[in-house]
Length: 286
Image (tube, rainbow, N blue to C red; front, side):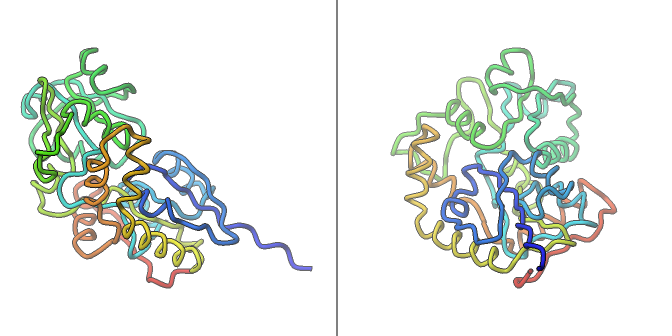
């Protein structure tokens, strides 16, 4: 008798920004799901514990010799992202020589901050520290990097409440003496390109089954088509206004299109000069 086929393990990071895909994803037979934060899934993919994951863009870049990315999936934005923020009380230029607290959850956001500081001539001391943005600022840090759902909630804590009279295209980023610098918006101002925070990367020696890709495409189509329902569901969990969450989700680009690849390659050149070429599989991977 032949040996039973081993399940294909994938890693999933359940931030709100991927809810339009993951809320509707029906895992096909033969696929096993492991959950974790970005740094955990980066490590799981590189160690072989999982064969595919929606991992940090910078880890894909740094391991481009071993990994390829699905050709039509990303978590990208053109302009503000609202959930990758540097909180600070002094102007950006005056952070020179200051101390900035970094989250341990996202390698890409840290690398993006390093690029933006370097490109604007701001040298600061970067330190690992966990806690809320305002608490860390009160403890003496000059800046605090926050990501994900926590960053989105804390941005609203600083700038909210936002009334119906405020356009969603003109949301505030400073109030009560605290500035919230959106790193994706600052990247767009620097390069004019989208920023890809994550890609769906897989080990070149273990490409995903086609059934999984089809399930992901179906889920994405359903999620984007029911964005109001997704926002309503997650707004309640986040404790945020539904229209704010819907605007947040509407901002994302879930397809890895030509502009997103341009931005990803430019980031690669800045963060890892001499990197291996970035490889994107075809639409029939597996």
